[in-house]
Image (cartoon, rainbow, N blue to C red; front, side, top):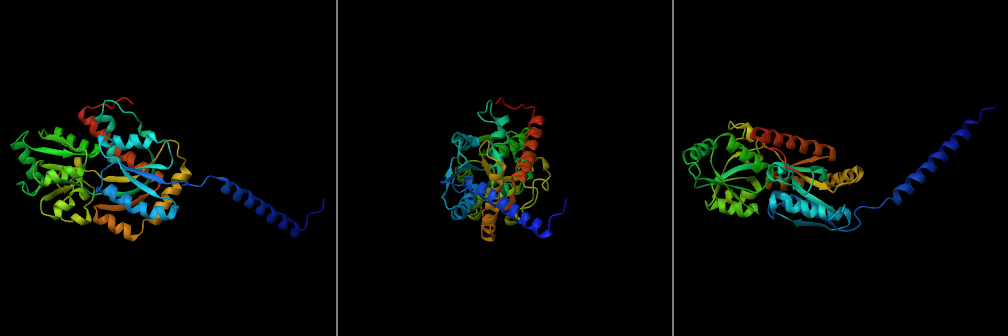
Length: 328
């Protein structure tokens, strides 16, 4: 059998390649575009929080990129469950959850029964690390975290503390119990309200994101004793970390990102993550820093891994406290 001319073979290869290109293009064009309508970004914390500010900064840029409005909706309260319930009840891939992982990683140990599973929250993109702090009123005679502990030991039950988010509260509550410290918790639906009460001395300790207490810090009404992050926060360069203060058990990094509903395919999550990265320019990174956050973009896989590390840390604290997870 005589071999086919080289020019004929080359021509057939080109035709085949063109055909494959046409088929691929047709498949891509037949795939549904996203977004096809406005995207709702449900935030688990109130207006003015670091998560809220960061989400709004991104929403403005994403609206332009997507050609559809990215609408921010605050759903604070219920230890993050209000936002999670609103998000999951939508059953819509155009409704995303914008939240710190600390809003829910401790839920199994803080609630007797949960209406959702951890696997219902599908990681899309890690956006930032929040600077988390232990803050007290400026009027409180405690110059360091060691002073605060000594005060709590000398006056058991007389100091109270404010809390608004799940895992960070859980970590601090575990710290108090393991160290035999008696402080009363005052729950708040909105962290900004807790910050205002802290500045007036109605509560003595508040473990929270720096963005929440920054106005009161700038006004001289609140002071920061330590940051729980694994490294010092640039806006608080002179404030020690929990580990530097001698309490590594309080170390906790704030992870913030977007989550999708159950069943959201990986290609769509990767596309959204890529869109977030493309709009997270130097101006947004600088603005995040002024609100007590550091840009820390991560893919769906990277975000899932970092969230799992935090969940494992919470589980470790729960075991130390003899707690078992709630039924789901």
